[in-house]
Length: 80
Image 1: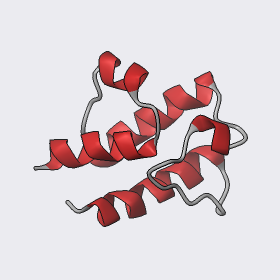
Image 2: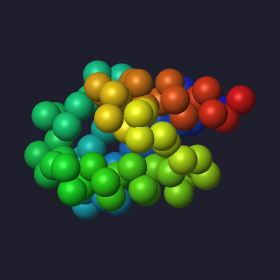
Image 3: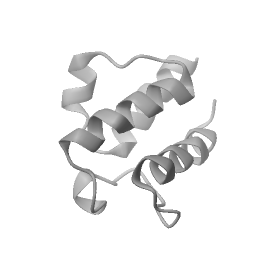
């Protein structure tokens, strides 16, 4: 799966979770960039991403991801 395909799907997940059709994530997007992205929504977001891609992040991955780019790196590596 290409990074572009992952981003297309991720944008849909982010828009659903945060109920905002304007969201467009990129490599440097962080929780600071999205108004409603707090710790509770982070849990909802991770669960929705895991469901969308059919993967499970480890707790270590969840707590060390610094931005969406790192999330995409993990997703792409799991899709190979």
